[in-house]
Every structure is written in C-alpha cells, then in structure tokens.
Amino acid sequence: MNRLRLAIVSCGFLGCSPVAPGTCGTLGGVLIAFLLAPTAAFLPWVLLTCAVLYVLGRSLGRWAEAHAGEEDPGFFVLDEVIGYLITLAWVRGPSLFAIAVAFCLFRFFDVLKPPPARRMEAIGGGDGILLDDVVAGLWGLAVMIPARLWIGDGTLWECNRSAWPFGG
Image (tube, rainbow, N blue to C red; front, top):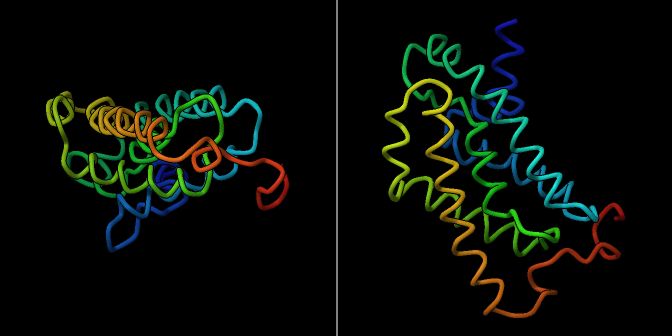
C-alpha cells in the first residue's frame, strides 16, 4: 500500500529522482499537457485533472510527511504537476512552444516562491504542500497570458491539432 501511495504522490516515481525531483516531477505535468493539448476541451480537462490531483495530494500529504520524516518531502510532486498545469490553463490546448515556456516559467516561480507562496507552506499537511505550487502556477499563468497576447500569433502558442504528433 505504501508503494502505491508513493507512486501517486511522486507522479509515477518521477519525484523519486535523486537529482532535481521537483523538476523531474513537473515532467509529469508536461506529459499530461501534451496528451490533453489536442483535445477540444483542454481547459475543462486540465481543471478536472488539477482538482482530482489536489484531492489525492491533500489526502496523502500527512502520509507523505510521516513516510519521509519531514515536511514537504521532495518526492511529493503532485504539487508541481498541478502548478504546472495551472500555468497552462487557458481555453485552447498549448503548442509545444507554450508547453516548454510554461515549464521554464513554472519552475522559475516555484523556486522563487513569490508572495503569497511562501506563506502557503506554513499551512502544513497536504494543503501546505500543494498551495505554494498553486500560487507559483498562478504567477506563471499571469506571465503566460500577456506573453501569448503580445508575442507572435495564436499559432505560436496554440496546438495545431491536425499537425499534433499521434493525431488529434
């Protein structure tokens, strides 16, 4: 049972990486975004995914901390997946370019922890683990929206379903 819990909170063990577990865990979000990008209902699917992952992460937060013997253990990366997906949360599916830009932006804000992200960590338990990354994701989205409007056109930022790898 502990192995299943670990698989969930580490996003398929990505968070168990000995080097940069948060960055590796964010790749789980990249995979989800890549798979959902060509769908016509990208935003609802992303929001549903974030909600389900939040409920799972919240319920497993105290277990993860007890299992690791520390607060906000590095292997717990559902928060990175959620925050990353929030960075990409707009109506249409993202292009590969947008997926890459969002990855860089989210990781930047996750490490920087701008207000009120740092305060969210003090909440403790699953919410404390998750909410700082939700805030980092919102900061990333706050940069992605104007970038999308001011840099290039929609084809740079939005998924071209007909040209997407593996169909769409």
